Image 1 (tube, rainbow over the protein chains, first blue to last red):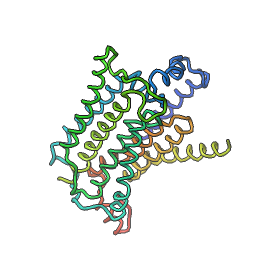
Image 2: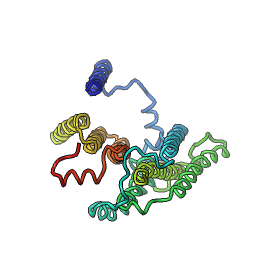
Image 3: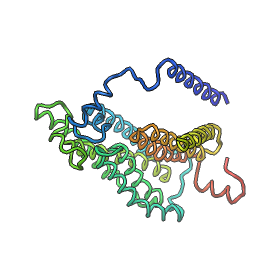
Image 4: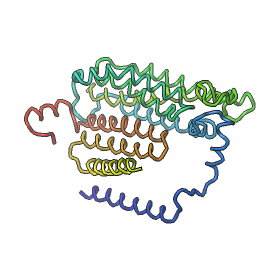
Length: 232
Length: 96
């Protein structure tokens, strides 16, 4: 009971903080100037029609590498905790297939999710979205069939290989920029034509690696969580 | 402009109701769905604020994988099970 009101108290305090921020700061007039400079410059120097992608991969690529390593650490920790089976707290659910609606819906959704996931990843430098969002959609696409049919599970070894390969491609692309006397993870191959599928240099390669890595990590994380209680 | 205001009002009500439901629901699966609903409503706000990238992330992670993660964690802790749910439905009363 106490924790509930504690949560509400926290929410009220947070609302008060936001209220103070809103009243003290004029709306729509941020004190920073970097945003406008990036908006002016990104389309011509990086060549990505989606400015967010230009910022995420070109201007702060090493931050993205940090995000990837945090995800990797989290997925590794979950694998460490859940990988050693037979210590489940609850009674295990039997490995029965899901209901008819789940199985039929998954059969229908799997190719669509695959298509949407890869579309979001490959068009990350043109339209909203990118490796992280598309990778999550890919993870959902590969977890849903296992939820519907728990006996046909995916191999963790294969997913670890995909993850490692994608991470290696990301870092090697970043190191490749060093060979051309550029900064680590700087986009190579020039900006290209704005809005074309093959533009923005190496950014699509980087985002494809990010998408595969995020998808494999999250899929194996969710599978560990879902299959462990089925094992007990 | 009016339709945008209407959408905002509907979404504010939806998000607030879903957030309160997530706090006070006894059924943990229902609470997980409620948190996913909060994320879905917030992602609509992100679209209206012209941040489609953030909206995609919020919808995919918050509404999609987040709800699934909470439900699977609850199932792993033994707080919610499929067959228990079905049995209680056959018995005629809701679980927990």
